[in-house]
Length: 365
Ligand code: GLY
Image (cartoon, rainbow, N blue to C red; front, side, top):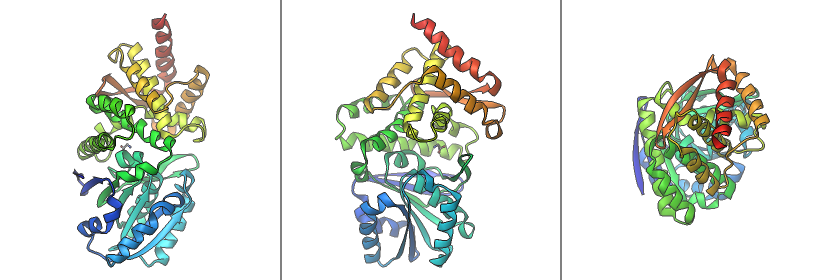
């Protein structure tokens, strides 16, 4: 078992990581919550796998429990689902001293977290992430949000949970593509902060049943995220480094209407392409891009886009002027394990990205 502390300014809390943690969930809840009532928010997939056992164990420990289930998938991060959730919370007569439990992946964490942040002007909530991506990234640090039809995460808040309880046994039931989606984010941590992690990821790629390495990697991601969030909870500086691969990645997801690539796949392309380009400009140590590409390939993550699609992606980023302002903050690697912010004027974006891609073409010949 691993226990880490996140000492954010707005709230300090613990991340607990353990294989089989859900079997003892009531004991963990007792440590952090003195109340009686727990409102579980989950989705149709996770409900089938874990809800019954969790409810049983909480009831046996004397809690009153209610479960609210939303459809699995990104479409549930909507204002409509949020409104239905608020009404369910109202019907359940929740008060500010009751606990919201977000049981699921990133969508559930974001939706339930935003509901907890806003209903009755803020309720206690605990994150129980069940996907790799949620365990290493989205459940930690308090970013909660829902989408608008014009863009993702446009309505949200920074609202910290009272604990993050991660059961690594849940990862064994993930479909391979969903697991690999999380590996995209996991590779990101090694790239921006700790190059030694990349060796461990290579070891894990050789033996994907090795839960010991996986748990160490998850712990390291959580440590890094906690360190960054403590320094910059509101995402105005160093926290932006967590967006390595995301500027292109988000635009790639949007270009394909969130249907073709998972988040982790899109940021894998983003990490590989931006690093190829920054290497071509001499901003990144040579060899970084090919190492990232190789790692991505181990987990079936894509690494490139055709030029005509890149052009559409660029024009989609430029079309986001309303939310981006005049500059795009790229995260570049000086070397593996060391990232910097690199602002590019929106008007120069095409020259920057295509210029890098062209240089790369020349360098390759
Ligand atoms: N997922 C990036 C962040 O929490 O800042």
